[in-house]
Image (cartoon, rainbow, N blue to C red; front, side, top):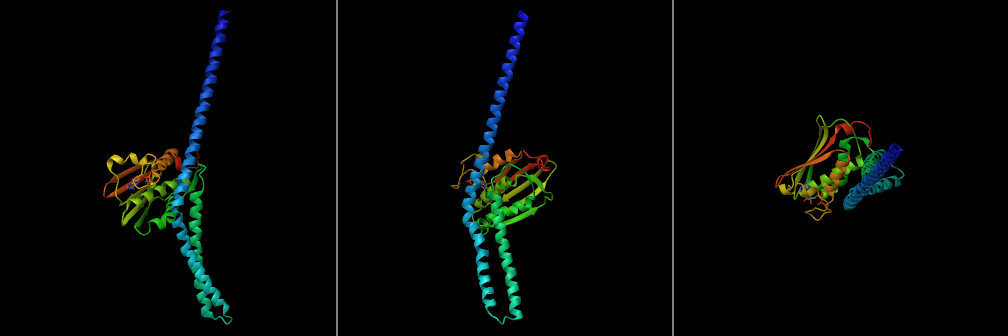
Length: 275
Ligand SMILES: Nc1ncnc2c1ncn2[C@@H]1O[C@H](COP(=O)(O)OP(=O)(O)O)[C@@H](O)[C@H]1O
Ligand SMILES: [Mg+2]
């Protein structure tokens, strides 16, 4: 009888332990899930904020080809009013139409880039050409940087990779924009893409003011800013890199410039595996 009681007690204790275990596991899971959702919300908010800051420049980049289109279409309108239009006029029109198509393509590209950037990431990875993503980022920033920055592209990476292009695009945007802000008058931003055994990496170097040694960790803290920004760019960049299993490294010398290296582990990006 005593034995039976003992066994019953053990079973009850065991069951209680299992129930507590399941309860905590779910609680932790729920916490991690809500943390992830919270991260995604902050990441998206910061992205919309930076697009907001850039919107005047982007409108400008759209406005230029648009003005050009309007002027050229007016020309064509005038030419075609002439009922005895001759062959050489038709040739002129052909040239103008070609120029108009170039202009519409420029607008189309910028709008596409904007759609890519503004979309809220669902965390899914798609097969991405890193150089196209970098070029799209530069187009979005172009009006902001064109007067003082020369962009040197050294794209060595050949293969496409599986990444969350919306989030990694945001990382590129933050770092290139920071580099441009660090340059006072005129300077160079060099973008190198390459790979080694373990990682695909993207190195973004600027010839800006540089970062003092004792601030190299601080720059990743939320709200740390020396230029009246949000101070969230690098914090979010690091959060994104942690979420995708990669990392970001910084090397800098005051007065010379900075190098930010984004590392993406190959084991995570060479197939269609999704988180
Ligand atoms: N390329 C860079 N060169 C020099 N300083 C930089 C660079 N990138 C970031 N920093 C420093 O790190 C700070 C934080 O950057 P970030 O998190 O993007 O916020 P914000 O751009 O809003 O200031 C910047 O204010 C600046 O002091
Ligand atoms: Mg920034």
